[in-house]
Amino acid sequence: MRAAVIIPAAGSGTRTGLKTPKPFILLDGEPLVLHSLRVFQRHRAVALIQPVLPRDLLGTFRRRVLQRYPLNKCLPPVAGGRERQDSVFMGLKALPEDVEIVVVHDAARPFITAAVITRVIEAAARHGAALAAVPAQDTIKMRSRRGMVVETVDRSSLWQAQTPQAFRAGILREAHSRASSDGYRGTDDASLVERLGLPVRLVEGSSRNMKVTTPGDLALARALVRKQ
Ligand code: CTP
Ligand code: MG
Image (tube, helix red, strand yellow):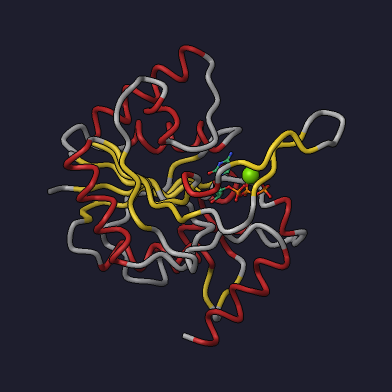
C-alpha cells in the first residue's frame, strides 16, 4: 500500500500568542512540525510526505527542517490557503496521481504514534475513510441561545475527532472538489466525506495525541516530552 501524508502547517498560530510561527516553536529543542514528520518518515506504509506551509515560510521550512534532518520522504513544501481545508486541498493537488491512500495529519499534533497511523491506514483501505478519535470524557450539555441548558447529551455515543485521518485517494479528492464547488466548509476532512453519504470508520486515537493550540497546551506538551 502506497500512502502519502499531507501535513497541514499553514495556519497562523494566533492562539499560541507567540511571535514564533507554530510549526517552528521548539519542543524538546526541535521544531514542533518535525516531531510528527519524523514519525511518518519512519513508518513503513508511508511513501511520501507533503508539507503545507504559509507561503512566506516555505524557505524557512526548507532551511530549518528539510536541510537539517533526514526526511527523504518529504516532497518540496507547498503554500497553504486561507483556511485549513484550503491548505489540505493544496497539498492534495500537489500529490502524484498514483497514490492509493492519503493520510492527513496536523503539524500541531506532535505526539502521534506509529500504531495510530497504522490503524487509520488499514481502516481507510478497508472502509474508504477513517479517523482517529477518543471518547468524550466530560458531561456534555446542549445550550440554548439564552444560556440555559436544553439537555444533557448522551455521552456514550460522542467521540472527539483527531488527526490522523486517512482516505482512499479518490474519495478524498472527490470530497474536497465537491466541498470546494459547493462552497462547503467543514472543520475536518472526514466531514467532507460524510456529506457525500460515504462510510467513515472511527479508530482508537490517543489522549496523548493532543493538539497544541494555546500557551497552556504548549506547557502540557513540554511536560509530556520531559516524561518520555
Ligand atoms: N492550518 C493550515 N492552514 C490554515 C489553517 C490551519 O494548514 N489556513 C493547519 C495548522 O497549521 C495546524 C492545523 O491546521 O497544523 C490545525 O489548525 P490550528 O490548530 O487551528 O492551528 P492554527 O490555525 O495555526 O492556529 P490558530 O487557529 O490559533 O491561528
Ligand atoms: Mg486555526
